[in-house]
Amino acid sequence: MVADSGLTGAAGPAPAGREADLRLKKGVLWMKPPNQKGILVTGAAGFIGSHLCERLLAEKHTVIGLDNFDDFYDPAIKRKNISACLANGSFSLIEGDIRNADCLEFVFGQHPCEMIVHLAAKAGVRPSITDPPGYCSVNVNGTITLLEAAKKFGVKKLIFGSSSSVYGNNKKVPFSETDNVDYPISPYAATKKAGELICHTYSHLHGIDVACLRFFTAYGPRQRPDLAIHKFSRLIESGKPIPVFGDGSMKRDFTYIDDIIDGVMGAVKNCSGYEVYNLGEETPVRLDDLIAAIEKALGRKGSIERLPMQPGDVIQTYADVSKARKKLAYQPKTDLKTGLAEFVKWLRGRKA
Image 1 (tube, rainbow, N blue to C red):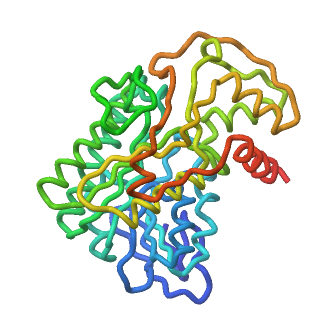
Image 2 (cartoon, rainbow, N blue to C red):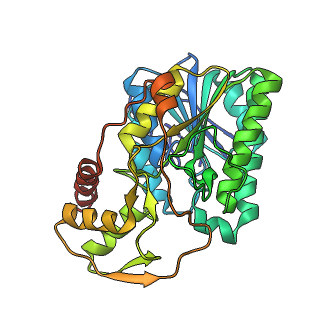
């Protein structure tokens, strides 16, 4: 990954005219940003992470992105996600793993951070059922390694990307942050609950301000290709059947990416003590109604392949966001019709 001149490697060439320093330590690529405190975003090249980096840069923050470009889906997609940020002189990218303490020590040692937004994780409910150790390694051990580095280098604010999956099959709706979440039904959900508890422990022992954000089914441009809206849209466009698990009655509180990022930015600006927040739209949608809405947005009908319900899938999600409204000034405003139109525009634009 070391080049003879300039800044090159997996992240691509550095923008012209930008001071750059390439160092290699245990497989870590370092791109030196301006000399001021920044915000470290883990999972920076992912769906939510790349949108967040763009918003932070637009609001004039210095941003350090950390991503290991895991092959859960094509790493080239993630490199494209983050490509616009690389053109900004206030952004730097480190290719490394949150489980690597040497990597984190190098990152924090080279660049002081005022805050961490921790989005790096192994994602997905169904895949977690076949690989519980892998999910525990990244989502639990990786989070502990990151918190240890934060403690060592005096970083006192952390935003933790959690998930609505922690609610399991909670019968009370809408889901509130005060509900009991002791009964996850997938390893992924269990690791996210564990992450929240670990964050609370470090907040209590070491005075780290933490906001845990429970994301409710984020969608929009750059959504992961394995997730329902993206997957269903591609299949309908290509004339292939949509696999539907169950009778179509399961419900999800689909949340547009711009609303998710508004919520994260609210937490960035209001992170104090230890808090948990739901970030959703407060509008659960049946799966069969979602498919009909996607068909309308695409202007094409799809065919459905009915399959049994899958282990780990919850029956419904439904966010109560009153706490986020009050404390983070969170105001979700993108309805499903508008969000799907934006997603379809992006999806078809990629093919042009």
